[in-house]
Length: 431
Image (cartoon, rainbow, N blue to C red; front, side, top):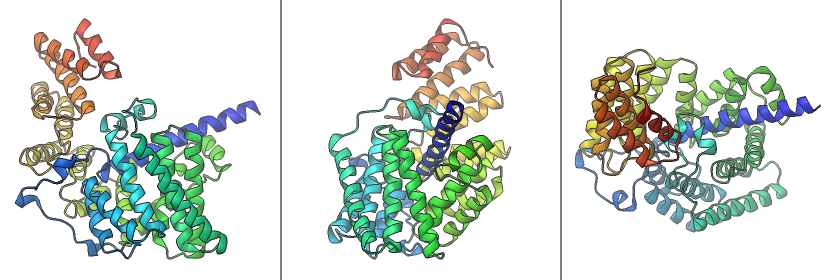
C-alpha cells in the first residue's frame, strides 16, 4: 500500500510538471511570458509601419461587450495594461457576468505572473520554474485575484444550484477553476490545491460537452488534459486515472483541432497548444502551418516570430532558422517589439551557431544581448555565460573571465552563476 501511494504521489508530481510546463508554453507563445510592456511603453506610439492589428471580428467572444475583441487583441499583443483597463470597464458594465469577471481575472493574473518573473523563458527551458525564487507577489494584486475568483465562483455556483444543467455557468466555473489552478501552482506553490482545481475544471468542461456537444470552447481544457495524460508512462497514467485524469493523446489532439478551427474564444489558445504538442510529436510541418496562420494576425508577438525559427531549427533547416532569428533581432532594434524581450532571438541564434561549431559567430550573437538597455535577467545571464564559453573555445581567456564575472553579477544564486564560477576556476573545453 505504501509503495502504491508513493507511486501515486510521484505520478501526480510528474503529471503536474508536464501539465504546467505545457501551460507555461501556452502562456509564453500567447505573449504572456516575455511580452509585458511597462506602463510608459504600453502608452507609447509604435512606429507607423508596425501598427497592423487583427480585426476583432475574426473571433467570436462569449461576452457581447464590444470591448472584448480589442481587449483580447491587446492581451495577445502583450499590452496587459490596456487589456486590464478594457476588461475592467467590461466588468463594471456587467458585474454579474462570470465571463466578464474571468476575462479580467485572466489579464490581472498573467500581468502579475510576468511581473514577478514566474513565466521567464530561462525557467521554462527546464523544470527550474517549479522551485525558482521570484519577486514577491504584490499583496493588493494577490487579493484582487482571489476576490475575482470568489466573485466568479459565487455567481457560478448560485446559478448551478438553481439549475445544475446551466451550460454557461458550468463553462464559466471551469474557466475560473483553471485560472485559480494557475495562481495556486505558480504563485502559492500549492501543488495539490492546483491539481484539485485543474481536475475540477476538466470535469466541469466535460459536463459542458455532455450537455452541449457543439460547445467547442470546452474542448480546449479537455483536449489539453487528454493529450498530456495520454503521454504519461503507463504506471503514472494508471495512478492519475484514480483522480479523474484519464487521457487519450489522439483524442486530445482532435479536440484541440476542433477548438482551433471554430474561431471561438479559445481558438487562439487551442492553436498555440497544438503548436506545442505537435512539436513534441515531431509533426513540425503542421505546427509551422498553424504558427504561420497566427503571425500575420499578431505581428507584434515576438514569441510567435521566434518560434518560427525554433521550428525550422528543429526541422534541421539551420540557415532558415538563423535568418528568422536575425530578422527578429533587427525588427526589435527598429522598434517593432518596443518594450518586449526580443533579445531572446540573439541567444537562440547563439545556440544555433554554437551547435554548428561557429564559435566566433555564436559569441557575437550572445554579445548582442548586452546592447539591450534592460534585458530579461535570465536571458542576460545565459548570454553572458554562453559568450564566456565561446571565448574559452576561441582561446580568449581574458574575455571569457569578464563574461563569467558578468554572469555571476546578474544573479549570484542561480545555477548558471554556479557554472560561471566553475568556469572562472577552470576554462571551458567543450562538451
